[in-house]
Each structure stands twice: as C-alpha cells, then as structure tokens.
Amino acid sequence: MYTFVLPESSRLQEVSAEVSLEELQSQPLQEMIDQMFAIARGERGDTEKRVMVGLAAPQVGIQKRIIFVDTGVDIDRKNLGHLEVFINPILLKKSSAVVLGREGCFSVDPCLCGIVPRSEIVVVQALDRNGKSHTREFSGMTARIFQHEIDHLEGIRFPDRVGPDGVLHWVKEDEYPEYRKNWQQWKVLCSWSDWCAMKSGKSSV
Image (cartoon, rainbow, N blue to C red):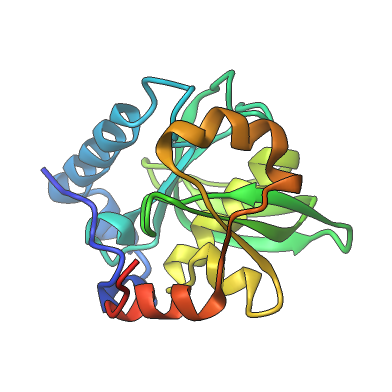
C-alpha cells in the first residue's frame, strides 16, 4: 500500500508524467488507482477533523498525472460527495473571477492552513479510468479542489500559491472546528520563511 510522502521531500516539487492509454489499460495502473481510492476514502471518516476531498498521485509517491476529486462536497466540507478519478487532467478554462478560501493539505505540516486565491469556475478535460475523454465545468468548492490537486501535478503546493505577501495560518488539530467558523479572523500566523524552512526540511517548528 502506498503512503504519504513526507512534506519535506523534493519529490513533491517535481512535475508528474502523463499516463499513456496503453499504461492506463494495464493491470498495475488500475490497481494503483484502486489503492489511491482506498487511501482517499480512509481519510474521510470524521468531518470534525481534516477531511480528504482530493488526492493527487504525487502525494503518495506516484509521479503520474492522476487526481481524485470530491465533485459534490459542500463549502464547509461537512457533507461529502462522490470521489472521482481524473487522468491527465487539463484546466481548459479558468474564470477571471477569483475567490479567497481556506485550504489545508496532507502534504504539508498538519497544522498549516492558508487563504488561497482560486478561480471561481474551471473547465476540466480528463480521461476516466477506462480511457474515455470528457470535459466538464465545475464551480465553487469543487473548482478549488481541482486547482489544488492539479497544482500537485506541477510540483506546487497551496502555500506556494499564497506567496510571501499572503496569509498562512497555524491551526492545532483540536482547533479545526473553530477554524472552519472563523478562518477569516484567525490570529495565529505562520510566516513565509517558516513555510520555506518546512519545504526544505530545515524547520524547527
């Protein structure tokens, strides 16, 4: 079974490879998809804690352009929807309208969250696990998840999108329910230099 790559691993900063149709139809790749499904489902038990609404293959050490997205989760991540797999996803369009929203990730320190600007609407083209191409439009929370997960395929994590002039938060596990309600007024910050240290494995936090 695959496991999460440590946040300081340089592998999380690599660009992932496309999956060929021949590879997609192979038993090893299909088994890989099943194992990723199992990992994603295993992190969806308690909505009072961190809940997985998306997963990218590089997060578990697979440098392939494969992501999973919950296409029905609500903005508060309380009511979960249906996890779907997307192979070689491409953002064909992104709306000029940008919204700020809170994000966390299983590939950074579990206490690190941040306010990330994302396009409100996206159009995604991808293959399903049978190799069939489809194009769909998503908005709101689902659009945010797609942008977050596709970033992983390019070696980008959400703090990189926040940037040195943005807002990163430090949130302890037992503070998550309160953070969901008051993230816009959260006072405990994480500095850009702290994130850079975490990313390089030099953090003492």
